[in-house]
Length: 201
Image (cartoon, rainbow, N blue to C red; front, side):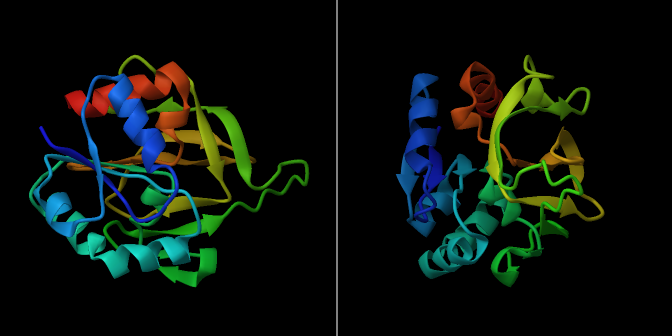
């Protein structure tokens, strides 16, 4: 089964590749839209600013390939900025995003000045009961690095939350698309289990 990791210079493709290899699963990093559109599974990672990430996706034609894969029913896992770019708009760089999901991405604005932004480090994640991605890991802490978070609109199922000066969306699911704000590839055994759950699903 061909698993591809989107290459758009978003920073953590190699970490994802190594995590999948640790699980014994072969994958390829690619910026070829044809390979993405034809893949059996897609991982859409991300580290960086929304504006520059969207620009690179469009320059490489990977945005259209991702849409084609989703339309075919291919399982797609998005990570961090990959989750944020699914929505309609991000406050970061005032960026129009992919619009694959209704909603927006906003900056953390904690009322307590002791709550630091960016949110960086390990946080417990609470999952919706029965969420397949969370099998064996509910309540485990995951590793986050972000200053912005998604506010999903109608029709988007929030399947996990965490807390940073208030509850926020940590993962969403719609049909064959699932996305996490945290980094499973940097989240130790629990993150590896999540990746294994995605590969098995």
